[in-house]
Image 1 (spheres, rainbow, N blue to C red):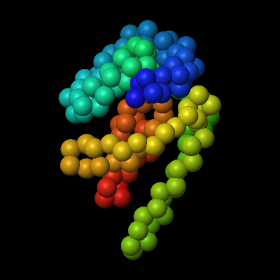
Image 2: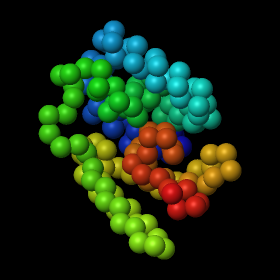
Image 3: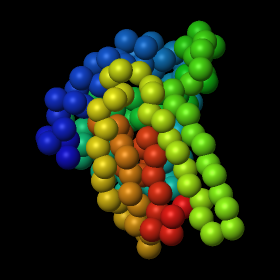
Image 4: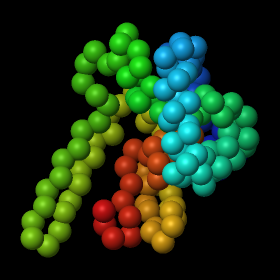
Length: 150
């Protein structure tokens, strides 16, 4: 996947790299990143292995690729990096007695507008994920739902 989406992944990471490098060079954010990495390694190691493969195929450093996937979470460790306006996207869920419908508006940063759809299996569940180029499938995707509609 890294090779297939190499240009889109590199473009996206390059657009986020200045702010991301600033975050990853601060002690507090490095500690936060380390905790996030350890949590992912403990809970979803198969997703990190997939991201390492995407990193290898795209030629983008793993640390930066994971950092882009976790950029919103990393922003919480630095007050100046936090958003000053509305967040990226909007969600609306409507449920009745038989169904729930989730509406997701993808209106984030311009580099984040290259999306693709993928099928992912995590354990016994199958997920459909709408994903940003280079992000963890089923982990940091724009949206995902499982075979049970959740």
